[in-house]
Image (cartoon, rainbow, N blue to C red):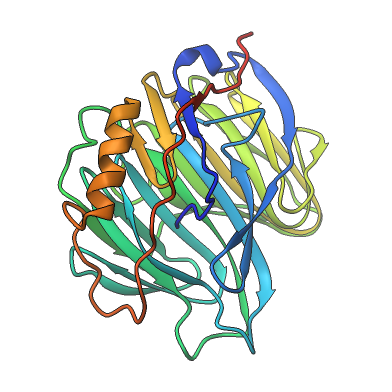
Amino acid sequence: MSNLDRQAALSVCGGRGFVVAQPVRELLSPRRVPLGESTEVRRLLPNLGRRMVGAWAFVDHYGPDDIADEPGMQVPPHPHMGLQTVSWLHEGEVLHRDSTGSLATIRPGELGLMTSGRAISHSEESPRSHARFLHGAQLWVALPEAHRGAEPRFEHHTALPRVTAPGLEATVILGTLDGTASPGTAYTPIVGADLALGAGAEHRLPLEPDFEYSVLALSGEAHVDGVPVPRGSLLYLGCGRTELPLRASADAGLMLLGGEPFEEEIVMWWNFIGRTDEEIRRAREDWMTGSRFGDVVGYDGARLEAPEVPTARLRARGRTR
């Protein structure tokens, strides 16, 4: 997923100084951002109150959108470096192309996982013949220093493991939940899981006390640790939890996002994650001059141009407790 913000700021993220070391309940509201021709997303991370959760550095939630008479998602070729993209759908389809030659149609319940490593470019679009509704989330995972220069690759996992309990079905998207591991490649201790709760369900989900966690509400009505989480919002939960109480008054869909706090300080701008301002500026120049990021073959249209890099970086906001 691209960040199409033409006023994107240089942001400093990561580092344990911004981690809340105890359980909290911070409800974060989204910022609405247009994406392409006919899609609007609700951006939860980065947020003015919270930049990262573990290695999760970017979270967009979109839909359900009625695109029966619309082109749907149309994101031209654009670059990434230093991160993984995670595509997750509840409804609809997304056609993925990238500069490694990958071509895949991602459907509900399937994991599209792209590791940019040193450099990759890709496009995302709704197929010409597509379902009426489009609903899902797009997320980024920051790569640690040891792996951020890796060769780019794309993984498409059509079958993912599940953790079940009365009234709960959890699909493990990335990392490990309750001893069950996703087949997707992870480079830090992490978890991403889709939680489907039935009406009237109550469950205490086991957690890792060293992880920090958040929950994104995709649909329905649910209480997380006693807090009602409206659709399209993100509840940050801090660290130090061994379990998470969940309750649904109606059918609900949630995403659990967590991981060990990301110790490295990173610089994030537009579609790049680096370590210095100069590295970001060099990546922009490489994209604009047509080198390094490769070409996306088969997309019908021009690639995305990068905005100008601002002269001043935006410091991350966070608290220690």
